[in-house]
Image (cartoon, rainbow over the protein chains, first blue to last red):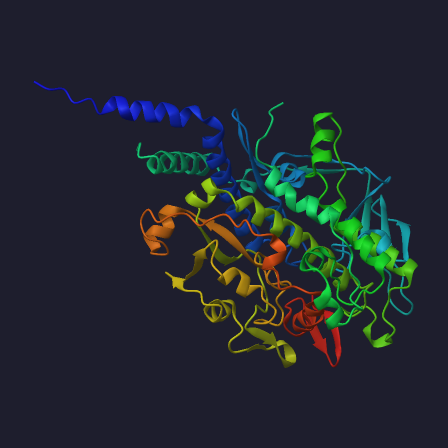
Length: 182
Length: 303
C-alpha cells in the first residue's frame, strides 16, 4: 500500500505564505480599503446636507483613504472626520472661541469670515447668531454660534462587521489561491 | 508603535505636491512647450491666476488641507501631537484673503461672484477641490504601481463616485432643461478612448493606454492631462480597483494572464498637461458644470 503525501507540500506552502505576514497584510489592507472606498462612494451618491445641497464630504473622505500594513497589522487609514462621524462626540472650537453652525444654504461650506457683513445678534431663544445685513433686505440668520456641539455616532458610516469579515475571507482565499494553496 | 512598510508610495504623491513649483499661466503656448513636462505637471495650474505669489498660496493651502499624511505629520502623531488640518471653508477663506491682498480679482463687474471671479466661492472651491483631488489621485496612482497589488487587482473601473445634476454628455439649457450633448458622456468618451464595456461597466487594465487618453486634452478639451482621476473638472468620476477574479470572470483578462507591469516611467513622460490646457478645460466646465447656471453671459452657482 502506498501513501501519497500531498498534504505536506501544501502545509509547507501554507506555512511559508502565512509566515510572510507583511505580504498577507498588504492584500488585506488593500481589500479593506477598497471596501471602505466603495462604501464611501455609496454615501457620496446619496448624501445631502441639511439644506438639500449635495455634499463633497464623502467623495473627499473616499479619496483620502489609504492602506498601510506591517508584519503585525493591516490598516485602513481614514481622515479623522470619519472617526468623528462613526464614534460621535463633542466638537469644540480649536482655533477660535465659537463654532459657527450654518443655518442658511448660502453659508454652507464657507467660513463665517468669508462674509464681510455679518453681525452678532442675541437670539430671543437664547444664544447668539450671526446675521447678514444687506441694504433693503431683511437680515438673514447665517450661523448659530455655539461653544460646543454634540454629534451622535453612527455605525452606518463604515461597512458592517460582516462585510469586513467577508472581504477579509475573500482576499485571504484569493491570496492562497494565487499561490496554489487553496 | 508598528513600523509600517508601505505608506511611502502614497506619500510620494504628497511629497511631490509639496515640492512642486508654481507656474503662472501668463506664459504663451510656445513658452509652455519649452518647459520641462515635469515642471508643468507639478505646477499649480489655476485658471488664469497669474500672480506667482497667489499660486504659491494655493500650493500652501492645499498642503494644509492634506496635512496629516506627510512623514512629518506621522512623526508628530507618534509623538502625541495631532496635526491640525485646514478645513475646506478655511482653505477657501485663506485663499480669498490672499487674493484680495495681492489684488487678484476680476475687473469685469458682471463677473463678480461668478466662477470667473478668482475671489468667488465657486472659483475658490474649484481651485481647492481640484488641487486636492489631483494630489490624492496621484497618491493613489503611485500606490497601485506595485507588482503584488497589480497582480491581485489588475484593472480599474471608471465609475461615478459623486452625483452630478448635469453629468458630462448633457448640459443645462433654458429654464433648467437638461439637453443631451452627443458624444460627450463618459461611456462615449470611454469608447472614443478605445475602451471596451464589460457587462455595462467601463473596465480596463491599469496599464492600458485608455487612462492616458481619458486625461488627454488633445482628445477631450476639458481633460486635465493626468492618466489618473480627476480626468476633468467636477466630473464626479473616479476609478475603483477590480480584482483578478472579477476581471477574469468578466473577460477583461484571460485566466492567469500576467499582471500589468508597474509603470516605471517618470510620470512626467506620461503627461500631456500644460497650463495652456487649463483655460479651455475651465471653459468647458463653465458650460457644462452641474453646479453652475448660465444667466445671460453671467455664470452663477446654481445651488
